[in-house]
Image (tube, rainbow, N blue to C red; front, side, top):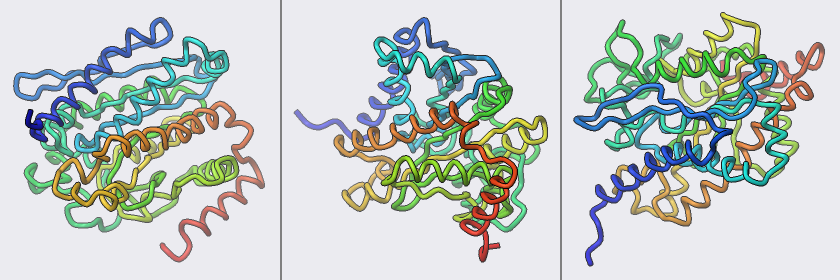
Length: 349
């Protein structure tokens, strides 16, 4: 029997992801709440943009959000989020420690922000808009041509959408979920899972629109410190995105600035940027496939990637639960601020 064409294999994988998400809502009952935030159309097909919540909704406890599939080509980001959610749901049947953790934290999942892009195998959504260049926020310094966001044409990558238009439906759904489920909490973290940049796995934090430091720089440096202390051999480069490039329309910059303007509560959005060049280096044939530039195509490498990042996601949840024990105050906050400036900004501004 001849092998299936790559396009059909990709289509079946995407269908399996979507079907798996639908099944999760039943498996996690009654602990897991499921909601369809909106639906996007690709031709005659309709795809739900879904959210799941677990844990304590009390705004006095911290909250953590996990997002994936913002860029349709980067399926591995959605798969990492789905794998973590699946693990939690299976553990609910027997893990007493997990049940105690869920009394102390709110967990929010949006595993596939851009299902239309996943179905079509494109970075952009079905309207040709790059959701990470679509927020109403312009960079304060020069951005790389095209990569930093452009309004020339939806036929070119990194298209921001028409000037003055509302954000795309998928981004509006992200904003609604963040504003309702994360920002009311005194402390909240986000991990948005992507792939495709370099040979190292990176944890990026705002800003992307300016090289100026983020207001919560001491908190982020303290978070990096406890990561380094507790996961001695972790693979992550922890840094502001601005160290690599600037961009227009970054959604997490936009939401972070909105949160800072509305409330003194702490909201820390992070991006896990998986280094897909590692997979290409080990399997150069991936260069000849569009999905191969952004995803591990060999089964054992995909499984290794899914295992590799579960520890990081668990760390984020525990860091949120224990945030009062590591968040710096007073003189310690100023110390972390100076250390962060020396590490990430001096000599680069």
